[in-house]
Length: 290
Image 1 (cartoon, rainbow, N blue to C red):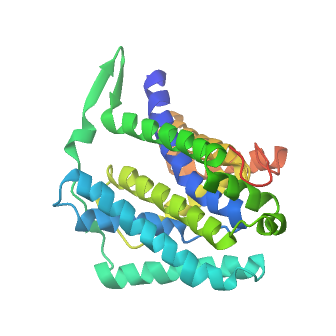
Image 2 (image 1 turned 90 degrees about the vertical axis):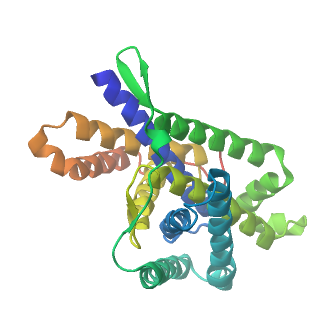
Image 3 (image 1 turned 180 degrees about the horizontal axis):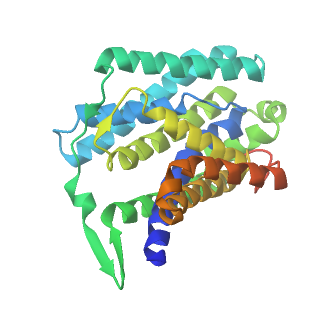
């Protein structure tokens, strides 16, 4: 029984780790905690609804393209004009953008949640000894590992990755050697958009509907995961998100039934304890670290 709980918790933790990565990447590059990130995931969910009658590969590709375009528009129209402003101004801009996108979705799709057709194949169960693993859990874990490895290779082995890391270490010096900040930051938003689209497809594939407020829980998880993992460290952010998901699943599984309604309270109490012990997060770092 406990082994089954552990497997389920690993699956949830992997999804939470992915949620955290996209938010942490943009923060690492430009010091922006983009609270509109959850709305990228929400837009991905509505894209899935609009593309649900198409072949699976079209749905996947179309969702990624839509979310990446919106992410780029965020950077160009909302954040670039205030980039030279204070961190508080950018933070308020992200809150305003989040609210704008939510209300736009509410107008476009209505206040009531829209039903989402389920992917029956993902519910396929594989029996391994005494535990059952769903195909969806396998895909979530595999996707998280692939994204982490791809990000590590991109940041260490490609020109744009090296430029991303250089820009976060010293923006002025990076500019002197010819690195264009607009290109670097836009690239970070593209990568963040791709991750948000992947999160949307994994997150909503196990849910029956999408609503205009669906992104709120995602951005809260991503923010808290990034903070406890260590802002500026992608591996720390992934670890923080994973621990959030793992702890939440185990609390819901192990708490007495009468106390399960307080699972969130117990979870955030644990978060406070972690931050009291490690105020800078589990893996604190300056700049993009993997």
